[in-house]
Length: 326
Image 1: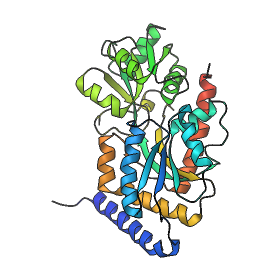
Image 2: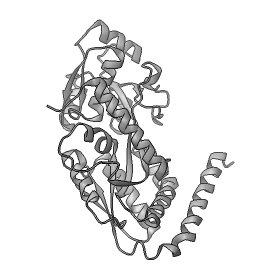
Image 3: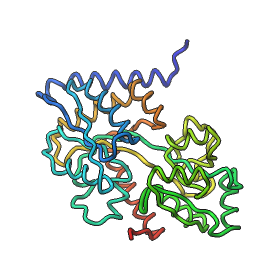
């Protein structure tokens, strides 16, 4: 079997990163010399939690210390995040943040006592999470243009679901209304009732995480029309991006590994290198693929710039949609 150029490039990257990590290990002293706690500000069993556990196992092997996942859900992820903000900046307490917890909800919620970018150290982008626009089969639309035409001909007829006011998926629907000039009704849900009502046509559409959308699309219980971002969904390779039909419409969901502000340079660089090695490994590549996740490809500096761009982008979306919490 002939090895592809992509495989050679990836193998070379892993070797280079591994050698760099080994050569600097002696200069980094004893870190880490005890277990590391990884705060996951989401419930156990959620997609971020599953990916965090895959990453913790692989990183722990590389670092020679166990990484213990600690689920601290609550206040849209900010209870767990604040624990890390207030932790000693020694590399032994980290957090897996997400677009929802670090750039969207901080601009909607009141009472957050820290800045999600300035008060944390970005170590690297962990994953991109494709979101898919799905509709119930009863909706007479097989493409985005057909959906928009139907919505314009039937103002208020369609309702779209989300997991709460001010959530990423809520704002995606509101932004589509603004950019496409259509009228739809938002219906917020908890996870269980949302699935039941969407599959039974009580609500007609939503932007959904690919991991939950793909099984329903393959089963024929929902119809996929587009990907919200420019990322391709491997299980739905022919699915077009929304921007093809609604210019400028591109929304990314993602996760990032953070430490507290003031993380020592040598510790931050060690974690950054090990993260990149882990994300390039077969174990993470295959595990993330099962979760319909795209492994991150940005280093620490690129991740910080990416987050600031995302923060500004969502600020604009909030202005455009006028969404506020009741």
